[in-house]
Every structure is written in C-alpha cells, then in structure tokens.
Image 1 (tube, one colour):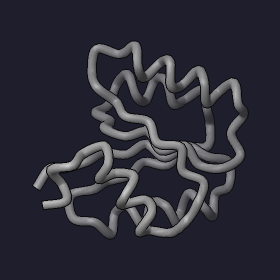
Image 2 (image 1 turned 90 degrees about the vertical axis):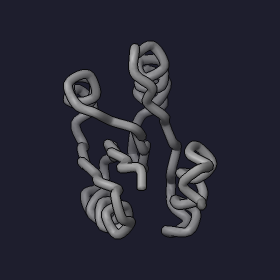
Image 3 (image 1 turned 180 degrees about the vertical axis):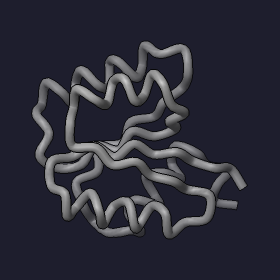
Image 4 (image 1 turned 45 degrees about the vertical axis):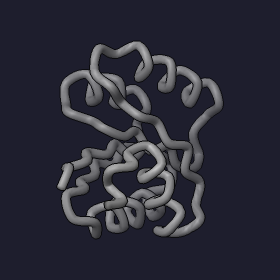
Length: 103
C-alpha cells in the first residue's frame, strides 16, 4: 500500500480537523493541517508531500500561487481543490490522481 502524505490548507479549523480525521481514517494516509499560507511553502519544500488539499476560506491569489509553486517543484506534488462533499468525494478525488490505489 502506498503511503500518501497530505498537506491540508484552509481557514476553518473545525473543517481542517474533520479533513485530517477523514484522511487518516484511510490506511497509509497521513495529514498535516495548516491555516497559515506563508508556512505552507516552507513546509512543502522541506517535507515529503504527495497532495496539497485546498479547503475553504483561502484567497484566489493564494490558490493560484500555491498551484504554480507546486508545479514548479522538482518533486511531484498534486493539488486538489476540495470544498466539501464528504469522504467518498475526497477518496474519488485522490483515486483519480493515483489510480493504482483503487485496486
């Protein structure tokens, strides 16, 4: 089983806590949650991150900037815009990026 490391970024702490719990309810998935956009760039540079999950409350410019930043890295970091819809939707979003996980 592939281990996936998530960085979940958003402004609503309750939603971030729920997303962390949902993510870590899947075997091999770990999550770091963050509400400080400035810290995210350093975290992504210095840690293994497979998926940056964008949650609610973020500004449009930050969302554009973090996507450009992730695309420009030497390591492959996927970005998911996730604004709700339950754990099934989140799994489908992840599986669409990593199809072998569905097996």
